[in-house]
Image (tube, rainbow, N blue to C red):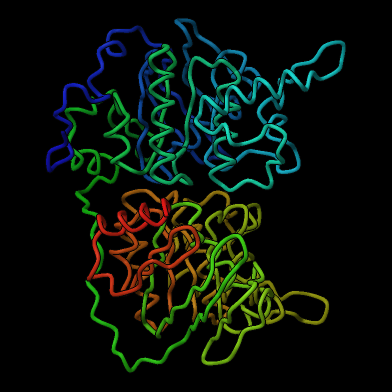
Length: 522
């Protein structure tokens, strides 16, 4: 069992498995540094991973986790330090070299190719061939075995990956990692797009792997997951290892947060005063439906109000936001802003009406990663800076700088490539774009996905500040506690139907779970 401070006292818990604790290291990282154009991303990282263990890597955004993962995956070569693999010092000059050594990586950003089939994605880069011809039947059969092992035998190997949900694509990425017969699998935020049942299935697979002697390096911002699946923990801060090999079973959550942030942090939601009933309604959704996704969804959002949509992956919650935003054309219903209908299925019409969306997949859907911050902020307001056929970049930067200061973006550099920012600051860039455009209805899909525990409180404060400024905010989150803590009112969805609508203070997490599970089984 887990006590009030998060310490696992159950002798049968994952963190107390004996085999991993006695084994010699499979991977030994010592004093690894990595410099990028004079900027030190890693500054002396130590890590030890043993066969058959789940070793959890923690740290805030910007702590160096992603850089370390890319070093292990062969995408980056360390500036200094050593890597020892199976007792011998090695170099990993390329991703192919890492895979051949037995290290497979599941990246946080979904790395599947939409135009290929499931089987082609799983065997991408190591196709089964003879005399130059790919043996597709064998590849499909092997893919089917891997998908069944993951509990997703319903995904056809011949299906095009682009037609799958984000969770389905994550399953394909996992199957690809398993297809390499790796001895170490690096999992970067593998549960980010999974619902609770799929997370349970993921953990089942992880336990199968570790029972067979495979090591898993598990990266997650969700400390409750670390408690459930981890054996030992290494914590990074500012590119350095500040704690190595901590036992999950004996390390309080408060200590982990202190190590990651340098301070004691509690995940609390800012206190909110009730929104007066006489505040004007900014967003009206009337009988909205999208064939095959959801039906008859209705709700209002007043100025200064936060409305949350709760439900499992596949409940239709994200599709509702996308339909309100015009990215999907609804088959029924109507969206109104300030009492005026918004032309359905047209993003431009929604944006003109004052609706902005921060999408779930912000890196692939909401940002130009290689462009500077200022250009991402001004992306929807280019015409404002047009000077004939040219853009006034000085005016662009000045406007972006105002939003950067207002949202306390860090670092406050308008010329910095967005790719180099942490997840929380990338989210701020998306919001800055809509605030600059003058949007008053903000749709936030998974606003804290990929945001570390130290930055979550800041994100929560930002959401409430947006509401206090008179905006209407709609939030979707996989974390029920987050939806309830952020919202004034909550809609609970299951299988595309609204099962409950009411004040957030009048429903708790257990009741929401009961509703979505009962609704999914109906």
